[in-house]
Structure formats: C-alpha cells, structure tokens
Amino acid sequence: MNRLSEFFLWGGAMAANQCEGAWKEGGKGLTIQDFVRGGSAAEPRMFTPVIDETLYYPSHEAVDFYHRYQEDIALCAEMGFRCLRMSISWARIFPNGDDETPNQEGLDFYGRLFEECLKYKIEPLVTLSHFDLPWGIVTKYNGFLERKTIDLFVRYAETVIRCFRDKVRYWLTFNEINFGVLQMGAYNSLGLIEEKFLKGSSPVPKTKLEVSLAKRIQALHHQFLASALVVQKAHEIDPDLKIGCMISHITQYPLTCDPEDMLETQKKDRILNKFAGDVMVRGVYPTYIRSWFEEENLCLETQPEDADILSQGTVDFYAFSYYMTNCSTVRNDVEQVNGNLMGGAKNPYLQTSEWGWQIDPKGLRYTLNQLWDRYEIPLMVVENGLGAIDEVEDGEIHDSYRIDYFRKHIKEIKRAVLDGVNVMGYTAWSPVDSVSAGTGEMCKRYGFVYVDRNDNGAGSFARIKKDSFAWYKRCIETNGEVL
Ligand code: BGP
Image: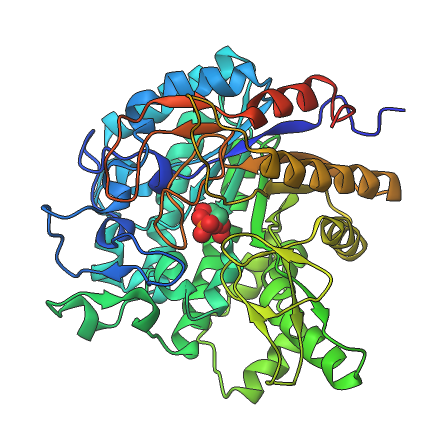
C-alpha cells in the first residue's frame, strides 16, 4: 500500500544567505549575515561591526547559487523534486529595507529562479525572511524592536507576493520564528544588536551579543503581527495562496519520570516549541504564556488592534524543522549535549551527530502526532538532515551515514501518516551543500550534492553528486516506497 499522497511535496530546502553569495551584486544591500565570520562547534562566530573585506565571511560568496542556480535546480530536478524551498533576501528587493521603490534587478533574479523551478514542475516554497534582515533595518529600526519594521516587512512581502503570485503558491513568513525566545535568536531572527556592539570597533563573539528577554519578546510580538498581516494580505491578493508558519521544533522529553522533570519539560516545550505555533495557528496568545510573562515581569507593549490582527491572520499550514530531540530536567549534574539553537540533557538511548545533535527518527513520528493532535491543520517537515564531514574519494562521496539518517526519518513520517497525520511534504536540508547557519562552516555538510568549497573560502564551487543523490532520487521516484 502506498502510504503517501501522490501529491506529496518531496524536495529540499535552502536559504538565500547560506547559498546565494553575490553579496554586493544585483543591487543587493547588506544583510545582518554579511557581518559574521565563520566559526566551528568549539569557536563561536565573530560579529564584526565593520566588514574587513580582506577576510573570509561565509555569506559573501556562500556556494555561489546566485550564479549557479540553473545547475543546482537541474540537479534537484534530476532527483525528481516536486518542491524546492528557498528564501528571498529582503535586501535584494529593498536594499536598505525601507527604500521607496523595489530593486528591479532583485525581482528579476527571483523571477528567473522561480521560472527555472517551474520549467521542471518544481513547486517553489518561499520563505520571506530566513535569518538575513537588511542591515538598514538592524541599524535604523533596531530590527523588529521598532513597530515601524512591521510596515516595512509587510510592504516587502506584498511586493514579492504580488509580483510572483502566478509562480509561487506556498509561502512561509519567518524561518524558525520561535528562535526569538532564545538569546541566540536576537541576532539571526530578530535583528537586535545593542548599540554598544554596533558602534564598537572590535569583533565580538556572537554568543556574547546579549539582549534582554523583554526586548526579544517585544520584537517577537512585532514579528507575529507582521506575519499575521502578511497572511491577510496574501489571501486578499489570491485566496488560493497557502501561507505557513515555520517553527524549529526541538522536541523535549523528560529525562526521568520525576514529576519535577515532567513539569520542567512541559514548561520548556510550551515556551520554546508551542508558544509561537499557538499564536500563529490559533491567533491568540496562550494563557500559559501570559503567566510566564508575569513570572518574568515582562510587559508587552501592544495596540488595541493587535488582537484582531492576530486572530485574522492565522496560517494555512504548520511547517517545521526537525533535526533532533533533547531531554529536560531540573537536575544540573547531568551530561549535556549540543543542539540546533540550544542543547539539553543527554538522552542515553540516542546517538549524536559529529556536531553533538541527538539523532532521533522516532521522535519525528512522535512530534508529527503531537502537532496534529494539537492543531489539526496540514503539517510539513521543511527541514531535516544530517550535518556531517564528507570525504571525497576518487571523485566520489560515499555518505551512507546520511542515507541512513534520511531512511529512518522518512520511515517515521510514513508511520505518522498511517497514524492519521496529514503531512503535506518533506524538504530535506539542504540539497546542495551550503554554509552552516550555526557555525558558518562549510565542512558541516548536509547536501545530496557536494560543493567544492572549504572553511577558508578556497575551492572551485564544482558540484559532485554524493551516493545519497541516487538514493533520494529512488525514494522520490517510488513515492517513499523504496528506502
Ligand atoms: C536551521 C536553520 C537553517 C539550517 C539548519 C541547520 O536552524 O533554519 O538555516 O542551517 O538549521 O543548522 P546548521 O546550519 O547550524 O547546522
């Protein structure tokens, strides 16, 4: 029996700042990512308030997708992709974020890109903001902290949705919007950098760019409003467009069955995973978050119209990234592991990746069921994959570890579908190797296609198919039957 629908959106996911490069071409303005250098799991990425062009910055050339998109999309088409998730860089459309008119060259570039996908019947799924706010928005408006940024974002979104309405039917507003509740989300997600760091002259580790919880929550509120307004706008433009939220779901298990651990797990899960989805799917702040605000002495600045904006701008589908799970506990004498956005307590039943992320395919089935029970709207796994070091041997890459990771995760998606969950699609991160968002490394590779580029910025950008390429092609060809 074929478990997945014949319309299942198989594909891959990429982000402009991690793949495009061409940081100063085509009229693009600077983005917040253009100011961070490469790091590693052990060494944090450095933020440099002034760009030193003699040094290597991963986003500046990334993997040169801007010039090689035709080759890359042809490779995706060869694997049989039905969907490609990409992001538009706001600064290619409005170079400073608040310009009066859009940059035609930027619109033309994305127009060509989407046409190229459609040529192969690949459905574009477009993220409007994936960790690369225009630098002008960061410096003039303090990222999303100023309410004015809502209008600027909505204007940008309306411009591209109108322009591409015939080419793009699926949109996501903010990548991993829930990241904003964490300290690490201040930079990537909300565009918040304290004045003292912005005006400074020496590099600062990204991990030290602290911003208060109150500011993060306020900026996140503005993102919720911006997202809800965009959902409304998109539906006005064309009621058939489908707009989703995008949450990084870092599923939490209690480390023990101690009721204290259960409560700790519930609290973490609510704040980190469920809060953003609840606001975007249900259109209202959940009561547990109001209690948490009181506990933390947080007072949100709101306008009378906010409640209506949120309730009228609920999303059509719930998209999320899933890489791993973590354990929560009140104990502080337990072994910790790394993770996407944040780490947690080590789960003795799971193996970790080379970057310390716990690999948990069954957790994906559990998560899909949990989200379906909660929301009952279509779900889409828009990021999942294994960051690993690949060795090139005689021009070949034998990445059996990656195949193993995908096989196990896709099996669990099929099981979740049999459980009754509505899963629209699956886009693996990232079909072609790209720069790691967390560490800025190239050696943390996710692709089915290898890119000849190293962590110092050397390499020819040549593309090589890995063993996983043929495996994923077969998987899609058989609609997930042959894994
Ligand atoms: C998610 C981001 C992606 C992507 C992925 C893998 O959080 O949305 O942009 O990069 O994680 O993480 P990393 O690149 O840090 O390995």
